[in-house]
Picture 1 (cartoon, rainbow, N blue to C red):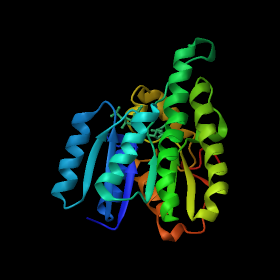
Picture 2: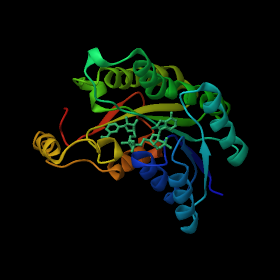
Picture 3: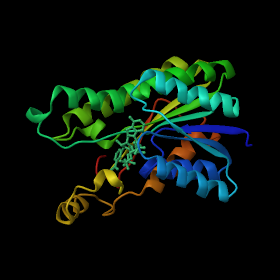
Picture 4: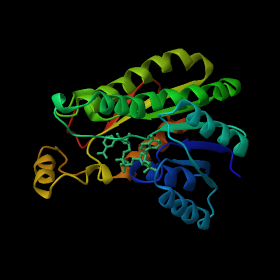
Length: 245
Ligand code: NAP
């Protein structure tokens, strides 16, 4: 067992998976949360365990408070503490504002914003006991800039930024840091519905002319969780190739 422990929500695939790999390979005990992709989560656990890493998987829909609580409680039972919580789980949807149904709106807010509350609310009490810890929330550049045809997504992601700033101010004196990463386009399943033609148009709009990778986000998360970032809290840091500045 390692000295430090991290819980990563939505770590079965995409960005969360890369974050779980980075933390596990950098000597954290890792709890890999998943909701639907059990096989992917299991394969990730097997692969990391073969590499000598310490990790567990745990199924929980973070949009439900009691499930989020069970995820954090599992981490405490297994590893005794939580040093870093990474609120990464999220969904996206592209729709005209007038076509978004109330249930789609609620699902977006419940998963992408209330999920952050649900996990943080349960983790913070343990962090307060230790007077240390940090939370990293995965927002989006669209939470900063606003995206047409993604009003519910952009609203939830903007909420995550406000949540980060407020909680950072409240918990600073308790030795707990709270930061936010606002990625640009990162090539994961979330981008699979875009045609090659659309992707080329988007890419041409990015000053660095490249799409981000899950590993770009993972490296930033690793830095923010480390003592190298001990003077950083309440911040939203983008890895977006300059698309939003
Ligand atoms: P992805 O490949 O679609 O993966 C989404 C992950 O979230 C999956 O592991 C999924 O788990 C999990 N998840 C979804 N709903 C959940 C729930 N209710 N409870 C627990 N886990 C849940 O997406 P991604 O691109 O890696 O996105 C990760 C985060 O980065 C999201 O918050 C997203 O908004 C943000 N982001 C992505 C981009 C991008 O361009 N890709 C850009 C900016 C921000 P299961 O499959 O197990 O259900």
